Image (tube, rainbow, N blue to C red; front, top):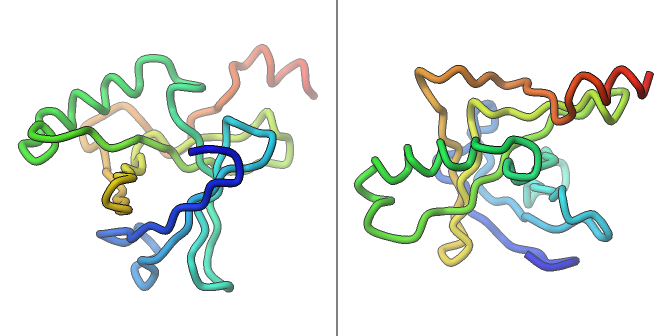
Length: 138
């Protein structure tokens, strides 16, 4: 995506906990190439901060892509882009990412889905920044 880009997406299946919402928009954050907003199309709907996992978690994307390639549907075509949902914190350096359930986005089809990585060591709260950076911020 490019600066100020906006993309309409259909979430199928819907995000867990938000089963009634399937229409979202994904857009860049001006002057911040590392984060994106995923917002429900409805004005009163939820808004999620996303990032690409390769920015903060080396090796994670390779593992997710390996799982996708094992899936017969994905192995026959182009792999979707992978994003993770960020949980905001009082201190920005304490933000966490949900690596257990990444979002898969197919820009060509304008479709998105959340994939749960069953039987993995990932959780819903992995710190974006290493402990030494978080301690110095306090």
